[in-house]
Amino acid sequence: MVMNPDKGWSPSASLEALRMRAALLAEIRAFFAERGVLEVETPVLSHAGATDPNLDSFITRYRGPGVADGATLYLHTSPEFPMKRLLAAGSGPIYQVCRVFRNGEAGRRHNPEFTLLEWYRPGLDHHQLMDEVETLLRTLLRDRVAPGAARRLSYAEAFLTHAGVDPHQATVAELARAAADRGIAVPDGMPANDRDPWLDLLLTQRVEPALAAYGLCFLYDYPASQAALARIRPGTPPVAERFEVYLHGMELANGFHELIDAGEQGERFARERQRRRDRGRDDVAPDQHLLTALAKGLPPVAGVALGLDRLLMVLAGAGSIEQVIAFPIDRA
Image 1 (cartoon, rainbow, N blue to C red):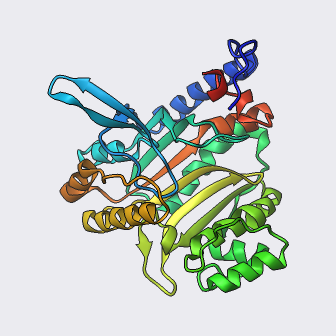
Image 2 (cartoon, helix red, strand yellow):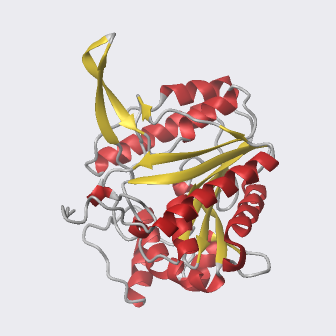
């Protein structure tokens, strides 16, 4: 990161882009108000960080009454856990627009501080929530989305079509061969006993670029190993009831038919922590408040997180996230 003192004082986004952001937020609030979805706010600071092995939280120290030696707090990577606590308390359908923080993420489509829209719909599954996501995106994007239903592809169908491999059955050797056959540069240190990094490589280098031809597109039913916080549907093979939303090949959102079993969630936290340790990342204690809320009873629910800065990139025709954020990390 290089800071330029001559330009750092001024916003990187145009005033037109900032006005577009304000209008977008107003439209989002009107959309959910019309549907009776409650807007909520939850803390940015948490006693628990992200156990996800692909994420790193920002860490700070709180010094105040009752903590003479200070207490470690984390800036949230998502408002998901406290929102689920509200759902367990009987909130009904809820949404939130908030700033979230992910350490180490920066680039053309990434800033370590960004704006997320996250919402939860009790009683819906991931397919029904995809319908609402499509309705919202068509409302916000209007003529930037082609008429007709969005394309929906299962994860398996997308890989078979665009990478020539079955993502649920292929071995690491077969995935590596598929990458080599397609001229994909393989990063150093790729594992010999973990399929997921190879699937991610084929997804980003082969599948996602091909999705650009579909315009608005949903991928759904991911490998069970990539369930994150989604339910796993039994079958041959079992699949995670998860979806991602793409527009012209750019990922906009990630959604789940949410896991509501406290015991299974605890086991997933333990596996994620082990994967963090295996990768040399800091260990992170699980969120006990979430586990308690799940044990008390979370209603069947589907939820999704949508990156508003990337959505603004589409609206503004911007090639970089810096063009839609007033002060990105190098100007913060």
